[in-house]
Image 1 (cartoon, rainbow, N blue to C red):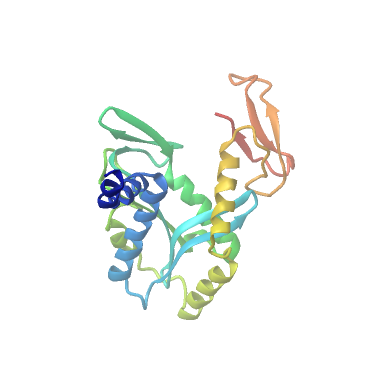
Image 2: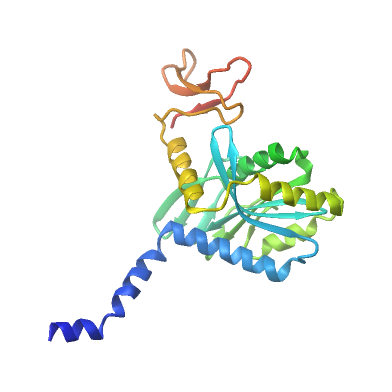
Length: 252
């Protein structure tokens, strides 16, 4: 009888597993990226905007992973996707933003700061000036902004309007092709191994005690102690190449 019971209800187990998977941050991020990719396919002219997705680049302190890049005559659009629900509070100058769902509050890194690293990695790879690269953040997933956001922080299809609003020509058609080729050849090969390496790099950067390389010059960071002022006695990471490189990272 038990065997017959389980045979009839075998389909419940895959549904239970799927129900758990769709709630994970990994799936939410993947689904958000898919929505952005799908909307771009139908709403951006493929003759004008060259899409390149899921780009992992080497950086002095490890790797950085870019959700979407659209290469066009109007410059490069570097798109960071966030799949969040609830109310979103943030300011372009704040290091952390807030997500609020009823009485539950979560903090997450300012996506503009996150995307800044993506932009700098592309500048280094392509030797392009900053005005030719546009940072764009798009939220999906039923979220609502509760504070005034910069024009390049958008919700759902709003990122399409922002991209189309940029009409100043920066690149010729041959330059567009050259940039797209340089990104495709300069990226790490899309693979499970690449994703795993990137995740390990992120985890290491988030560990306040883990040894690290300077994000600016690649030299080793050194754990130091503030000697004076209101923060006397607090620890921070400083670049070993000081004073040539003055990069520091606070330990929170």
